[in-house]
Every structure is written in structure tokens, then in C-alpha cells.
Length: 262
Ligand SMILES: Nc1ncnc2c1ncn2[C@@H]1O[C@H](COP(=O)(O)OP(=O)(O)O)[C@@H](O)[C@H]1O
Ligand SMILES: [Mg+2]
Image (cartoon, rainbow, N blue to C red; front, top):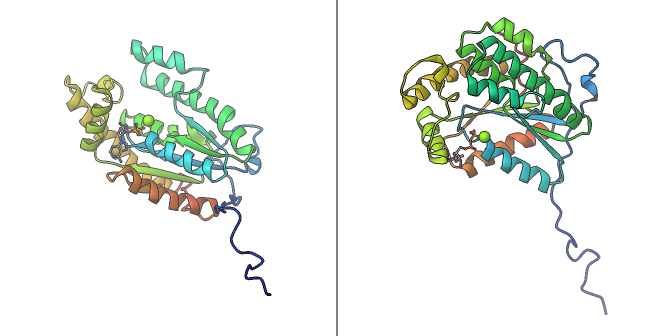
């Protein structure tokens, strides 16, 4: 009697679709870092940018969960995380003792440290590096304080051009509500209190954030950010980010600009 069982009655395992990242051309924005060959950096560098309270941490956590559960090793990085200068940066911020330029160089040093010790090793090992902010936040803050764009472009010529820059676009009112709901307070620096825009912190937050946002809009064009409407629910935002990340893995992302096309 013929058996009714076929040779493959059902799949024995649940197969998940694993996207193997395709290598793409790698370049620095400018002079790069001496001795680092960008073609050896095989992994993917994905940047999530956005003003304070735009939901970057929330989305990065979801990205990590999704990537790791689909078989990709990830590395996370962000600003003010280097052991080299972060303590000194905190002290300088608390004492409010440094000029804008010195502060800016302090941040650049912290960034260079992350680049050499976290981002490059992660990419060399073929990991997906997720950066919670990158040079654009540092530039936007400095530009809002009157720093020259060419000076900044030269300073951050050390940075690698990422595979994607996702910019979470959220209204200042929405971010103010989120920040306040989280901490019941606003941060002195995130409110731009050093600029003397207003003695009232809420007012200063809105004014300062509008200034930073204006600079971000200019950078969006120069660096060709992939703008994501962040005024929606975390799920809706993540669904869009996931689709865009799949494009990045396929080596087919919307390419960030080189920063020279203005
Ligand atoms: N899409 C969203 N809608 C409403 N609240 C959100 C959303 N995303 C994040 N939040 C909340 O807003 C606050 C700031 O989010 P967070 O991810 O920490 O932002 P960021 O890292 O950009 O400062 C948190 O309390 C978070 O739970
Ligand atoms: Mg955060």
C-alpha cells in the first residue's frame, strides 16, 4: 500500500529569513583616521539621529532586539560614552567653565575615541553598529552656537560615512512633553541655558530646540538623511525603520551624502 506521507511532510524547523549584509563602498567624510583602511570595515554602520526626546533609545532597543533575534551581532555606541573624557566632560558641563570651542573639541575627542575603539573594531568584525547620534548632533549644537561650518566639516572629516542615517522627526512640543513625562525635569544643556535665551527653562528649551532643529534641517539636506516621521506610535515607527534597515542590509540604502554637495 502506498504511503501517504510525502518525503517532506512539513518543515521540521521554523526558518527565519536571515539577510546577510552585502558589502558596499566605504569612505570617510574627509581625511579619516590615519592607518585605518575603510575597505576592511565589513559591517554596517546605522545612525539614529534626532533631537532630545525624539525616541532614539526606544527605537534602538527595538532594532537591537530584531537584529539579534535574526542572527546579527550588534554593537551600540553613542555620544559621551568614552571612558577617556566623559567624566571630564561632565565636570566641565557642571562647572560651565569651558568656551564653546573647547567644549566642541572635548566632544570631538570623545567621538574620535568611540570611532577608534568601538565603531571600527565592530565593523571590522562584521557587526551591525548602531549609533545613538553621530557627528550631526555635535555639528547642529555647534552651529546653533555660531561655529563655522567649514571648521566643523574639517574637524569631522575623521568620521566614516554611515550606511544609513535615520532622522526621527518629532515636534518640539511633543518632545518637551515626552522629556518632562520621563524625568519630571528638563536638562540644563538640552534646554540651551548656557545661551541665555530665557531665564525660564521651558521657554529656553523651546527656543534652543528650535535653533538646533533649524541646523538639523540644513544638515538633513547636506547629508541626505533618511527622515522618519517620529510623531507616531513606537510600533509604527519601528515598522518603517525595519523596512529601511532591510534595504541597508541588501546593500541598497538611500546613500547618505558626502557633506560636500551644498
Ligand atoms: N513614539 C513614541 N510615542 C510616545 N512616547 C515615546 C515614543 N518614543 C519614545 N517615547 C517616550 O519618550 C521618552 C523619550 O524617549 P527616548 O527613546 O528616551 O528618546 P531619546 O533617546 O531620543 O531622548 C521616553 O519616556 C519614551 O518612553
Ligand atoms: Mg536616549
